Length: 85
Image 1: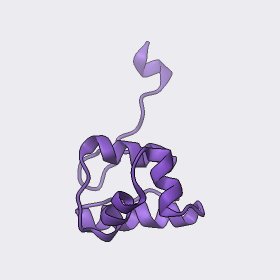
Image 2: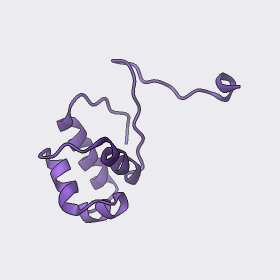
Image 3: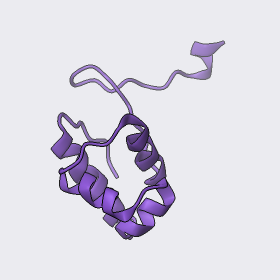
């Protein structure tokens, strides 16, 4: 999956669904990985429910993704070892 800039809940729902399908997972399988019911995954993907932050992190982790914040048009880079020490 490539880097995506998401600006709203609809984009988030679509990105989660797309990644799940890319991995060949059913909603039930994703739910099991994230500790959620398949029905809950379905509502999030369909945009009828906006997940809590903890639920979002569980889904992101279960899908092998990472959540990165940055300024508009800029993705923050992870610090190098030299930046830390």
